[in-house]
Image (cartoon, rainbow, N blue to C red; front, side, top):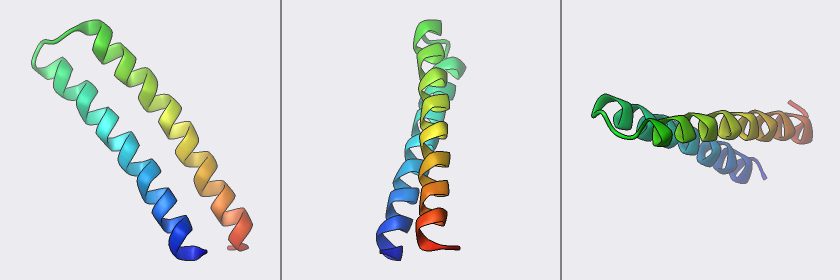
Length: 63
């Protein structure tokens, strides 16, 4: 259970970082402002999901 929960947390955090870097890379290279804005919105949603996952794991494991 603990190994699975750590894997789920890692996946959520990696998703946040990937979307963050896609948005930042797009802004730095002068790409579409719409794409950068969309990536930053996705980042916020993924951060919310990551926090919910982490809090759920802490609650369920009793730590």
